[in-house]
View 1 (cartoon, helix red, strand yellow):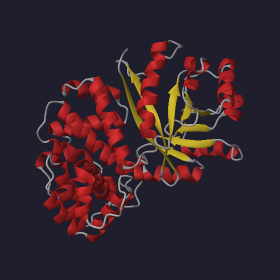
View 2 (cartoon, one colour):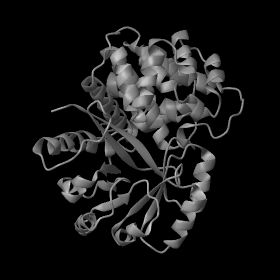
View 3 (tube, one colour):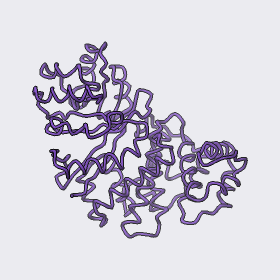
View 4 (cartoon, helix red, strand yellow):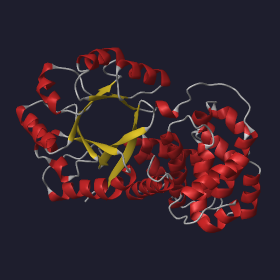
Amino acid sequence: MKYSYIARQPILDSDRKTFGYELLFRDGPKNTFPEIDPDKATSRLLSDHFLSTHYQTLGNHVGFVNFPYQSLVNLVPTLFPSDSLVVEVLEDCEPTSELLDAIKKMAKQGYRIALDDFVPSKEWQPFLPYVSFIKFDIRIVPIAKAGLFISKLRGSKIKFLAEKVETYDEFEQAKKAGFDYFQGYFFSKPELIQRKALQPSFLTIVQLCKEIAKEEIDYKELESLIARDLSLSYKLLTFVNSSAIVSSKIQSFKQALVYLGEKRLRQFISLVAIASTDSSKPNYLYGLSIQRARFCQLAWCKSGQRSDADLAFLTGMFSLLDCLLDQPLESIVELIPIDEAVKLALTKGEGALGKILSLSNAYEHADWEQVSELGISLELSDEVLSQCYDEALQWSADLLQVDI
């Protein structure tokens, strides 16, 4: 069987909390979702990846999955549990009576149906009583026009999702138009660019991140850094005490070091550090920073560059600082003590670190053509990249107790 890529993109509610993920598949060099038929191999491909790998990282959230026409008619979605799956009807599906019968059957079995990239037409009217979500691509159907359609169905059970929301202003407009959920990258762009001095506590965070990215942790240095910032110390102890592995209350940072061990310590400090930047930001943004850090580190090592893996980790983690601090990345990196190679990767996308970061971004956006090109140049196979991504997802999910 061919190896497939799967990436995920977050779907947020009006409070910018994660509601679910769209899971994006690629099978083979044509960058397309595989044509589904009842064939066992194809069913196994979906089952192996969707069930065994990605249900672990969905947590309590739902997974939106695109299914082409034939797979819907063949009721392939019913192979998967209905509680965690939203069945997306692709925009190129014809609204035939055959498809309507299949949608009715799945809805009756408890499956939630979403119409993807919806463009209103009378042909889809009979489907609406069985639909739970309608997704509008706001690049195709403007927010104002979609808002008129939403107002007509105000009393229905249908929830509306705005796709390709790229700016904070678009997010606000979509909310006012009646959208319930939002998909896009508005959450990873600065809401307001402003120049302000970096607080001393933030520089401590940078030093902490540098320490946990090293192969061998210097515990004395960590203890010294934590002691400089009371709020940071308090947050770390709070996270440690909320961990399932802690059976008795941890009273000091020294205790935390002993109790957690190196692996969990790296994870907790990653979370506390990145979440200390701005508590008003979407939770997913913190998870994405940590996920990127781990993906960059893993891909760096798999590409044969064992040294400087800590720099790859930092590159991923700091790649969203502009979004977390609402300042230009170029200004931020000039004020923090990080390696020149990391600065060049972050601001100009240069060097091997820049290439690894570009690879991470391409994977997140499901830009499979770019993923393939960068993978070839870094001598990373499809299978290795998929493993790195899955491991990074699981690592961040473990850290955030799958609430990301």
